[in-house]
Image (cartoon, rainbow, N blue to C red; front, side):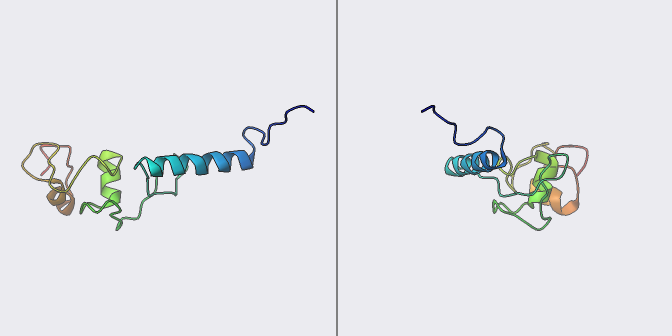
Length: 101
C-alpha cells in the first residue's frame, strides 16, 4: 500500500490547519498579534479605542506610526523633540517628526 498525504497542499483544510499551527506557535513564543482582521492591502485593521498591549497608546496610533505594538511605550520620544509618545498622540502630532510637536 502506498503512502498517501493526508491533506493536499494548499487545500482549504491544509491552509486552515497551517494557520492554526502558526498562530499557536507565535502565541507560545510571545509574539501574538491581537488584530485578526485584514484589509485587502494586507494591513491589519484596528479598533481606534483598543490598547491591547496596555501601554497607554492606542493600537491604531501605534500601527499608523510604528507598524507594530511592541517597540514603543507612552514615555518614549523616538524623534527626540522633548515630547513623549503619549503627548504626541493626544496632540495629534507625528512622533517621528521632530519639527511636528
